[in-house]
Length: 168
Image: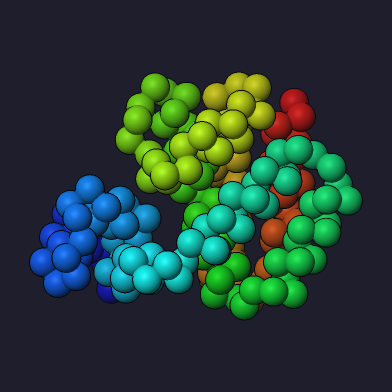
């Protein structure tokens, strides 16, 4: 199925579930065009995965190899394949938000986590490094969806690439 327009998702959340308009729009943005994911966010089922993705990016940007390995080991032992694939999607949204914030836009998908997103964005010395990180994470995500890749290795690859980009 294709992505559902965000306005339609928000309207459905408002009418069927009594969600306030601003929150409905926020949930629609987080859902990336999936009504099912919007409902999952409404029930609080995706927040832990999204938070884990942000924490992983923060650990990667801090650049301590032993912390990266420990965090990835933890994720690989605690989360299933679908949840880890979603972490890549959320990592994409965080990198997009960092880019949008650098550009001066307040239009963030993860507006509820703006202080953490801004702080993470401060680890990147130049805007082109954010763009490169976004492309890398997106490519790893796509590769993992197409191939039966080792998600642990993919997470490590993502982290070490982010580490390189924040160090330079």
